[in-house]
Length: 78
Image (tube, rainbow, N blue to C red; front, side, top):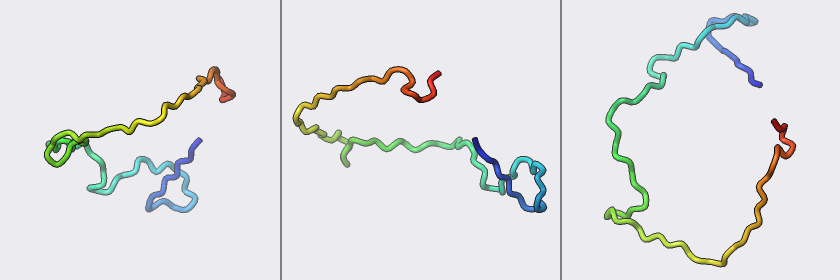
């Protein structure tokens, strides 16, 4: 459920007619970029461009017992 409120200059108080589509002020409307794109920044490299040595610390092994839910679990099943 939602409510749409349209506020416009020039509408009289208690005037509930549909004012129509909003006209965006000049220069504020989004548009598709069609220019050249810069090269993407790459993560995982150092200043020289060589890959960083990333090591994962080993620790104790953990065991998990997981049960996948079945059915709708009371969430308005379909």
